[in-house]
Length: 255
Image (cartoon, rainbow, N blue to C red; front, side):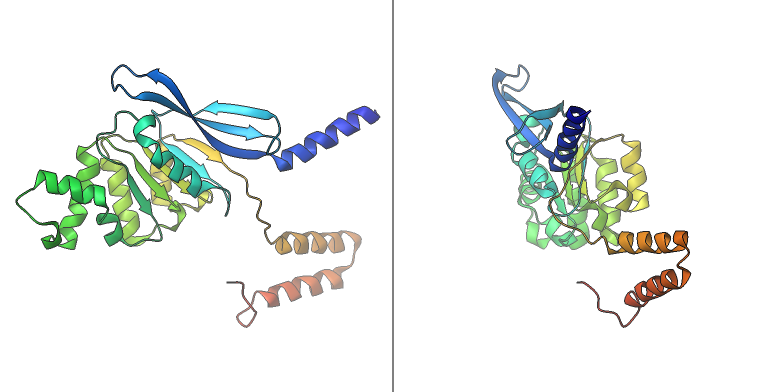
């Protein structure tokens, strides 16, 4: 019985120390159609940084990808690494990939160098700087509609308003129908965009984060329930009241 308990403890500790990350594997194998060396992406789980591999899962390049995880879980790093290696991973790519960052403006999305270069090749007699903002928006949509490329979206849950509408248009009109999104959680994404993402049936990966989070609410509720169970009703009311006051208009708020 003692041996079983020890094994259980080790497994329990490994569960919380588990590391989830992206692995990009390059090979010398040449793909016949593109003539490019084959590059594959894998989702890895290890029990510790230098421990044993628990799971190795191949990521399909024929389906979209949704990466979820809390702050500092490595979502943006996943996005950047796949962007850098995109031509070797998705060999059908005709033009450089598009990066949509939710904290940037629509103008910054439109002014990406690959979009400007493509439009200039298609319209050598015109000047990019003379285009109106509305015209540049149409160019961005044409870029993903006419070219087989991959759309990368970081912090998807922050999209709203005009940004959200533009992203939905890009994903629905995309020629490749392949996108890579990152978000804190799937249920935090705007419902209209979340419905589209769910219908696309993407490959979903959830990363863990070493950052500590505030568990005050959970602890307060637990203490209140314990007080109610043992009959300490005044204490439960007092604790609940103090917690409610701490969330009021004049309470200090974490930025």
